Amino acid sequence: MSTPPSRTDLLGRPLSADETTMLELYEKLKQLSAREDLAPCALMNVRQAMVMLWNVCVDLDLVYEEPRVD
Image (cartoon, rainbow, N blue to C red):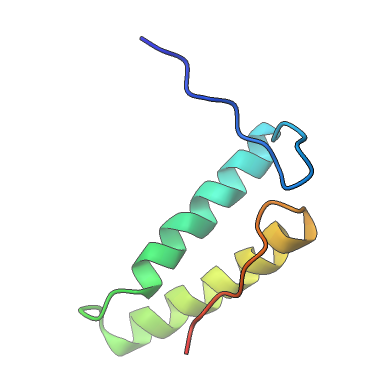
C-alpha cells in the first residue's frame, strides 16, 4: 500500500491531522453544497456548515478561495 502524498498549507507547512480532517470535511461539504437534488432544508444547512468550515480553513491558510454559495 502506498503512502498518500503529504498535504501542506498555503505557506508550505505540513498539515496536522486535525487540519487535514477539517480540510477534508470542507471539501466534502463543498461537493454536497453544489448538488441540486438535496431537500432545500438540507442544502441550506450544508451550505451554512461549509461556510463555517471555510472560515476555519482560510484562517489556518489551508485554502484561499470564495465559498460560492449563491
